[in-house]
Amino acid sequence: MIYFRIDEKNGEKYRTSKAIITGSKYPLPKPADLPRLMKKSISHLKTLRKKHHPVKAAALAHKEFVFIHPFIDGNGRTARLLMNLLLLKEGYNIAIIPPVTRREYIDSLERAHIDDGEFVHFIARMVRETQKDHLRLFLRDS
Image (tube, rainbow, N blue to C red; front, side):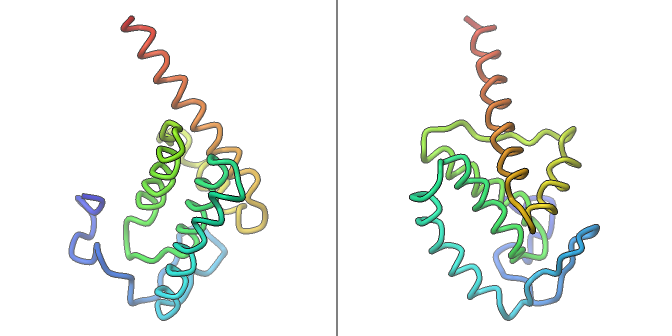
């Protein structure tokens, strides 16, 4: 389902070729390093959840996944799915990142290579805005 209308045949496999993110000045890991990095990232999730506020932990897990970029396509949507799963597990709403904020999202992710504070703040704001949207819908229907 995650790979609907993108590269479905490569959907369940780590990429085997070098990849770049257009506009990013940071290189992605080599394909040979992906299994080790993903294993490390998955085991790191527990630590993130124990050490940080749930919204920050979800944002950091998202960032870490995107920086590993294990797939040919669908990395962003998989990272957002992971982030939202972590938020839901902690009783938070999902964070919807609307198309109008895409540039801010990408720019804050790029800067997160040096300092992830802006990206974490962006995700926290998206959680809050999504919750406000849900409340508006609920109050409108009451």
